[in-house]
Length: 625
Image (cartoon, rainbow, N blue to C red; front, side, top):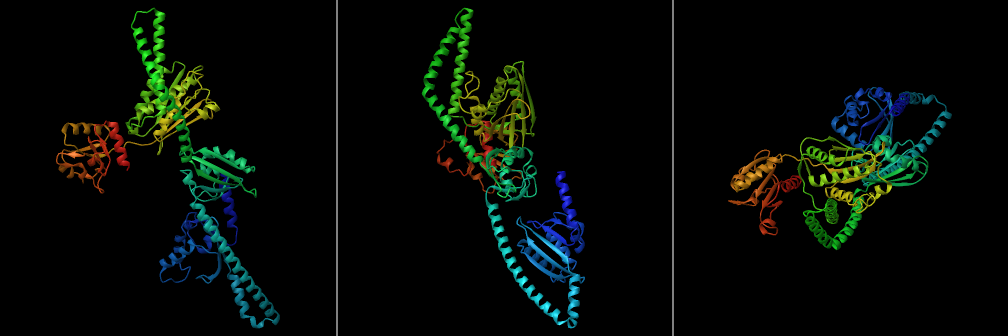
């Protein structure tokens, strides 16, 4: 950063030594660079000479001071000059200022957008020309001849300049079209010099790397991408700067997106061209297909063996249970108990295979995550033994979150037990760190064990893959992966960078429970009371109506956000409460799916009976829509 500041100061000092006034405005018509002569020549205040000053404000200031002579409509004159600046054309002109001095103005557009203008005081030149004209009668014939030749040369030069300006205009238009095309491409296209500094960008970086800025020209890679992302990319940049093409993928730490980056060395040796595209959807489809094929295999195994295997386990459990109630020698009794434990493990294994073959859906409900995590740690600690410690750190907002508590507990417990098994010989520490961002709930489990092997990192989520040398089923991480995908999240496994150990990061969509003001319309008093308690327990405010007429009189209450109504009320249909301009409506009914009255409803319908989790999930869908 100090290097950048010194460069900026050095450039500004050099510009201030130029005898001409200079200004550069960017594509947004804001001042990027100006020297001291620019301020002095036009008598501008400091505020209009700072980077970021608007061109329109500068023109208005100069217009009101009479810089451009009398104006019938100053505002219209300002507007015309601003519009001309938006389609800036190369030009050269000379004009006399109100104080009698003369200046020349030369302007040219820049390839990155915006323009540069150079102002030169030519008052002395104009005075000499006037003096020459006044004394022209005294000049010799030879001077006239030379003047005529010079005039002809000037006319030829003017024609050449006109041709060059036309060529420059064509080039500028071509550059503008190219820039417009690149800015329409759904990818980040950029050029970086050998100092890792951007010299071109199509301004699409925020679309690929959320949280970054579009105007990155002049920034270094670390300044534009952030330190973690640049650290992941830099080894490939170095190889590309050495002349080797690179194509690779990274996971963007801030958003979890999968980014594919192609680096092409500049043939002139001046840096590299960069093409970055978001391939998150492609990777998810690829992973889904891979895991679908593995689940299909598991399904085939399950369908072929589950019936017979389940019958055998049932017989074994029955026989061993009967033996366990019989008087047996101590050794035989221990053998029976061991057989029962092994058989129950077989039942659990069969159930887990079934989950991999056909994962259950989600059952989200409002959850106090801090309480769930503390209960989970309290449940897990006795299973870890004396040599393994489990610590919990949280950074969570107040309020409850919409989660499937069963799935989340299963996934976290599985990861904790995997970490315990990895440290079985030497012991160590397991850390559960939970934090929330605006988009994600991040649950990170790290340990101080030996870490993942390269094979484990590439195959850990495959069904039946295990590193426990025949002691594990190989289904735990596959189940965690599937459950996380169903919840719309991601699972990332890695080794810790600075210390020994493994790291598993679960990312789930951040969905806070938003308190609603609910109009509850139900003609059954007992059911209405039960629903009221259910809604209040979720954190919502409730206004009750025992009939359609009463509900209709309350639909225009200030602050009302949701209507929950029975489809069939005693005095009419809940359908009459649905209005495009009113709050979203959720209907409930005991009518089966396919019933005409239910099928014609213009809003979601919840089937009775339902529990609080089903109601909470329906509320999320209604309020999100």
